[in-house]
Image (cartoon, rainbow, N blue to C red):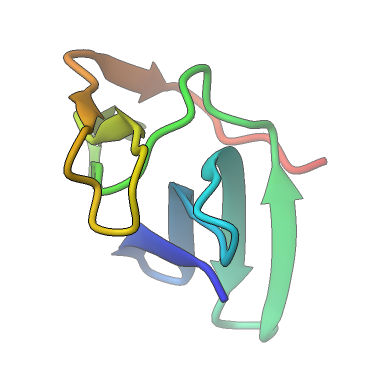
Length: 93
């Protein structure tokens, strides 16, 4: 199971980062095309992060904030990401 934040920019749903079942924080980027019903992997984001905001604006995708370190099941000893990644074109792998 994966936990992540996403943004829908019809017909595409973008999922950036997240946390897997082993509580590893991810740098993966996945794209769901609602017109075909298919998931694809895209090039990863530069900083692995969980709980980021994902926003599409002016033809760009912004991945904002999140957490990059989580040392307990409740993320009590977490470290926040203080950066924004701006993706011009999300390229599928």
